[in-house]
Amino acid sequence: MLTERQRQILSAIVDDYIRSAEPVGSRSISKRGNVGFSPATIRNEMSDLEEMGFLEQPHTSAGRIPSHKGYRYYVDHLIPHGIANQEVDVLKLFFAEKMQEMEQVIQHVASILSNLTNYTSIVMGPEMFNTTLRHLQIVPLSDRTAVAIIVTNSGHVENKTVTIPEGIPMSEIEKFVNLLNARMQNVPILQFKSKLYTEIGEEMRSYVSGYEELLTMLNGVLDQGEEDRIFLGGTTNMLTQPEFRDMEKVKSILDLLAETPALVKLFTGTGAGIQVRIGSENTVAAINDCSLITASYTIEGKNLGTIGILGPTRMDYGKVMNLLTHLSKDMTLVLERWYK
Figure 1: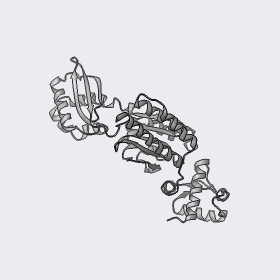
Figure 2: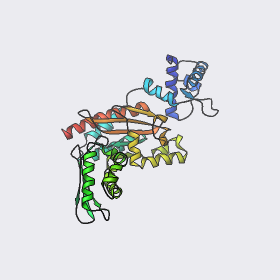
Figure 3: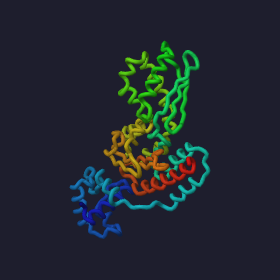
Figure 4: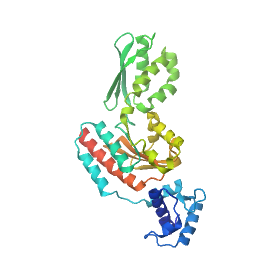
């Protein structure tokens, strides 16, 4: 349990470090009008905070920086609230515009967030997580081509022309489809591929000839549309952050942002409301030096999508969390107008 003085000093250090990206010393903290402690007192408290794991001392610098534990305490207990009026005005203007398609809204949200924060925004489109299979159908067009049709629980229909693997008769394709409809109904589309290869792979092998070729064919259909439901803004904003001067580190993050399945994994288990994952709390190693803040947008209690901001652990948490709170509420209102 931190004392009130330690809380004040930790909050001041986090605020200063977010702003400057430089280790914070006791003298700069003592000059803040809202602290009111001597440099010696602050130094002692900084040493105690470091011992408790809330601060770190990089290299031989006299200053300290927040640790992941320090950021977590700051987010949970000390974070300031409110965003600037001009940012609220930008959001109001955006949602006052007439937009014809949900995709257009999502693209604009990603762009606005990255511009307002100078971090990377990731917006998962409606139903990215909750869409399940209702029905699969493969309709032959010729000996070697067919249309694969996927109908989801929301009534959304996706179709794609596919090439039928050579030497596989339509009767085998029908068995393949019937088995999938029986065993995979109501399975989330995002889990579909993994379950295909794990839970019913052996059954497929003994029941359907050429099932591996058919799975490859189906994968092309499942991949379609995933990228269309994920929108990114400011993907190269990491390059402007001083802590990411290591190009190998930046490259691993940019590679991650280019991979749809990896992005989906980032958001797995984020849950409702505002969620903050700091550093190693993220399950993907490439962003262990980053923080990810997410918010869901809903209609009638059903999560239709998620908005995320990815940035360094030295992130302006208060600003981002409040932006996402406003945005998720506004997105929910837009969805209610469109879908009710």
